[in-house]
Length: 456
Ligand SMILES: Cc1cc2nc3c(=O)[nH]c(=O)nc-3n(C[C@H](O)[C@H](O)[C@H](O)COP(=O)(O)OP(=O)(O)OC[C@H]3O[C@@H](n4cnc5c(N)ncnc54)[C@H](O)[C@@H]3O)c2cc1C
Image 1 (cartoon, rainbow, N blue to C red):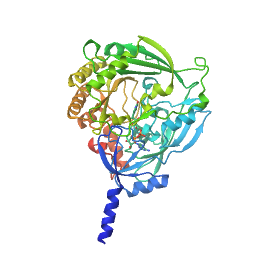
Image 2: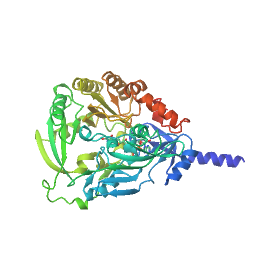
Image 3: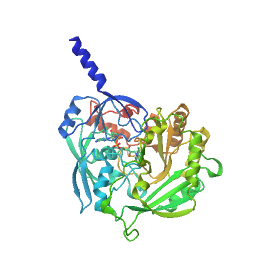
Image 4: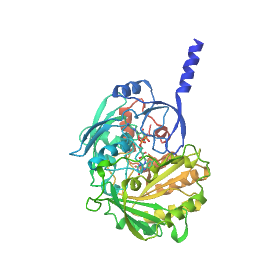
């Protein structure tokens, strides 16, 4: 009897895996299950108790962490690709890089793509991801035709704009809390070549880049890299990247049919020391990066890979931040007051002595109907900070500032947001909680994030 008890206890201990999101903060131990069929998902959902779905684990914080995790890696089949209509239907664990391999040779691209292609369709819907074209094309959900969701009672519900509508909009941005997305169908975008016409504009400060972003709102893609290690009159100096898919007339010799996504060129097999990225290394890198662009306004034809996914060139680049991990602070503030607000926030960051290796400014279009969807009309900034006492204090201060500006922060990047800030900035949260209490009365779907923020 005793031996059976100890064997059982040992199995429990050994079955736990050390796991985290992309930021390596926080870390937890969890049982990770990888179901390979709808029935298996149902069986696990009924037997494991508290759990959360997980895709590729590229959300930064704790949204895909729980005591038990149902990972979609084995649910990765293409179910149908209608290459006449450009409609793609697949299981939720299908990765965007693998979708690109199927659709690009046939002249299609993803309607919305994040800054990495290593995420799943389930993760794209659950976070309602946005790309460099949000001001034109909105979020991923706006191109989703339907998905099948297994809710806590094991029922599979088809959700679309006309069927289970409330559940559709609660799930788009609902961070896996409404159920397990099994499969989804979405509309693709036509392209003629695999190239982007990339215009780069050098902007001497934050004011200049905001003006240029607004002036060039007609471009499909726009994003600015910001140097946030420099103060004074060059505070927020930037490189603004504008882009359009190149046509055949513009790039005659493109071999679209042979397209294959490249693998990362370099990798980091282990964590680098925690001090690797500090204000001096960031300052030096930024000066080189800004300085390498000589012309004020230049245009070049580039592959879409480096344009959309520059960070994918390195495997596990998150290890640059060391074993303490890092947090991405991504927020949006409404257009009115955005110029002054961004300036105040940048000044506070420079004053704190915390430098962000990556700082990306984007323009958002109108908010969609997703209940917890992040984007709304305004300017958004994303910053990466290594985890330490000073950066955590800075991010707490930024929460207060952004809240005062009627802004909000992105759940897919969050690992430490103040609960009061979250509650104040997502007005449909009470409606979301009400739906969860009906859908999942025993609170089976729970992540470390949903508990931390009081959603479940
Ligand atoms: C380098 C980099 C750049 C990025 N750039 C952007 C960007 O430009 N725009 C943007 O919006 N995001 C961006 N992200 C964030 C990323 O797109 C989102 O966090 C996305 O959700 C990650 O998908 P995933 O498959 O890794 O999901 P995970 O990180 O595993 O999970 C994310 C959430 O989705 C839920 N989920 C996953 N699968 C399912 C499922 N089958 N059913 C129900 N719920 C599910 C999880 O419970 C969790 O709440 C970036 C991330 C990285 C690392």
